[in-house]
Length: 305
Image (cartoon, rainbow, N blue to C red; front, side, top):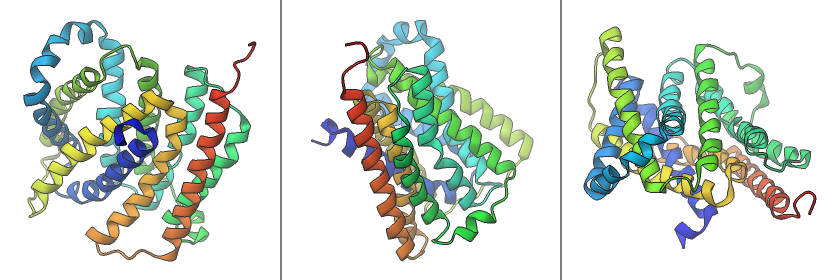
């Protein structure tokens, strides 16, 4: 049932990524960002090897002959977005980072209209805006003055690059859907990501000479990032994109903020307040409204028919 419903898959992916926001925020204080991303995807690759390694090796000729789209997907969604986000949160506040991330659905819809020629109407903009208002209500803690006092710094610019990477990744995943076996596509994305991030993390360590820390929750946290927030979440997200397209999936990304707030109450001791519930209701309403409009557009009669 779960793997047949794109909406349940999207909720699962965003729930796991909500946990990733909380766990990653903690771990990036112990491990530098590029190294953290490299360890995360090394764990994911090692977890896949016993079950898929031999079969994936047989697919190498097909994947390597199409190395350009494969490299693009690896550098944007798998390596790029997560690494850039880890870098961003070192310099910018959580309000700024979450505000930037909430613009991702808009970028996906707009890029899909240009690249995939998906049918688009301005009627969807109020629905996107409603979901965005819900996100803003949560990250501002129910106070619009918090938004008015925002300033933009180096971290914000890294976050802009991160959300652009994710928007491009989501659109190109739909563009390449059906051209490659899904499991092979994801496996080789991770393999390329590891090949890129390991030398990058070595350069990072040599340049920064950071002091590495180890806490009691370090290993469980890394396993969560490598297995649940990587393998399971990406598999669910990519399958949902192949089923209904990136535009209809885009609005669900705002659920990450909702799940992050919920998980923060359990792991960091933060309290769940009324503004969380109000914001969550607005986000869910916006996501539902957006998907209703896009589904009616994409399932309607084609132009000229």
